[in-house]
Image (cartoon, rainbow, N blue to C red; front, side, top):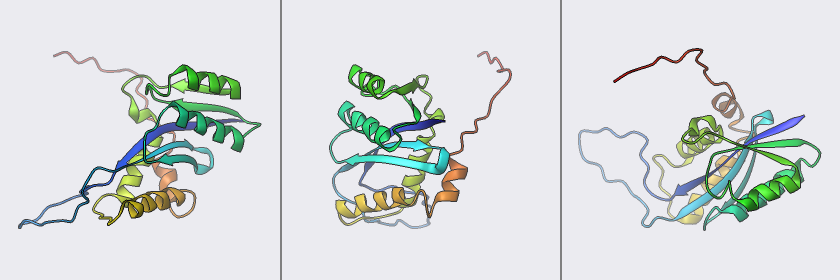
Length: 181
């Protein structure tokens, strides 16, 4: 049995995010000052809607990714594991590649400029919709708690929504149409 995880980071910024706004008169909405970021490095497996996350307020770098590799290996020590990732610099570095080889984890890098092939991107969009759009948080602590609560509910409350949103079915085209300009 091979376990396939889709891996990527999301950088949630505490600020104003409008879902939809249409009105006849001008409205003033509360918004947070500053640009505090909450970083989430996640690995999503379609099998059982498993989500493994590491969070911080600083940066996502190769050290964070090595920690994620170790966490995945600790949770599934006997399984063959493949991580599907984009081409971020901190994901393609020697440190990460060497640690993956040491742990017996296969890395599969997506083609450049193809974020739609990484299913976890849909998870980040879902998270923003659930807890950021049209929401105001008084403190950064409340902001982080809302994101953590949403991610914790992936296997319980949001299970059916996540299963339909993050399914591994992609539309394939037999022949591409050539368009000339």
